[in-house]
Amino acid sequence: DVATKGTAYTTEIGGLVKTYDVLEEKQIDENTHQVKVRVSVYDYAARGLTKRVKMALMPVKTLKNSYPFLGLAVGADELAALFAQRLAVALTQTNKFAVLDRESIGDFVKEEKMLLSFDAPLGEQAKLAGTLGADYLLVGTISEAKIEKIERYLEVAHYTARKFKARFAFNYRLVDSSTKQIVFASVAQKYLEDQQVRDLADEQNPAEWDPAQVRDAFIWLVVKDVTEAIIDRVHPVTIAAVQQDGRIVLNQGGNRMTKGMLFDVFTRGEEVFDADTKELLGRAENHVATIEVQSVAHTMSFAKVVRGDLSRISKGLICRAREVKKDYKVGKKPSITKTEKGGVKLPFDK
Image 1 (spheres, helix red, strand yellow):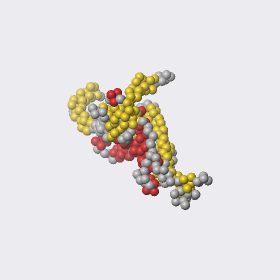
Image 2: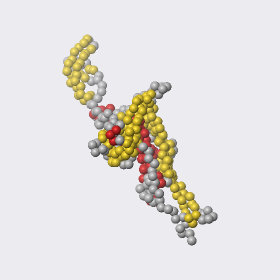
Image 3: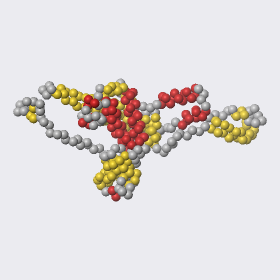
Image 4: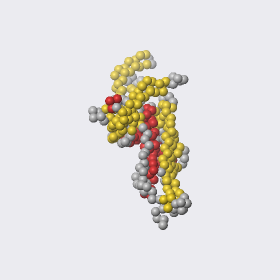
């Protein structure tokens, strides 16, 4: 209540008011008073306000109760949390998104109820108004995830053949929070066989593998695919600068970028529209060069031209990651010989 001088009349005011001073009072009629006051209010602006696109990561959903990773059963909640944490890190390190945590929304609600129910100081309650709204919501479901070891005993050779397979599928949608329109939807699918799975492990001997380490390495591969797809849709990698020594600076770094990655560089052409809906589909792109990442920093990367003309590369050009098939080295010649009857003779056979 605000009590004015010279009268018992009071006026109800709302909001989180810190202090007030009555500057002027005037009676308009028998039942109305006009008061001019100076009010100090609590105003907590969100820390680290940014012009970046704000993306809220909604809790990741799953379709199964548990997922097998080399004999390690990982619960649905644990896998969802692991995936969400790594996705948040990857998106943050692109330096293009303000990533908002919605994974812990239950804890935030509890904090809000506690501050209000225990009559916390107004200054503390004012902090509740600092929650940022998202431009996009990232919603996704893990439909499949496993790494399996397949063993087959060869009785003739008294030998157990062992191979590995890995599968992961993440269905996701990028939703405009204001219109609820799906602006991008895709499925990140990853399938690895034997040597590709072996490359995930820190140790060469499968008997010494840590299932959790191999699992996490596999998750990172899927997260990188999701991040690259979203970035290409919302904020593609671009040329930030071309240095005098020929080094090319890219506008993204962190775990998403790795040394040796190849990118095709494109110039933007004319806009292309859908003939039926008249919707803008994008722009025509013209390939000018291929570059290779040489080093990676937290928020940027450095590359060199491996194909094309450096003089045609300039600030602002778009870069698309090129998928490269891994070239596995050929091992030594096997010391096994075939017999006339179609069998094989092993080195220890007499």
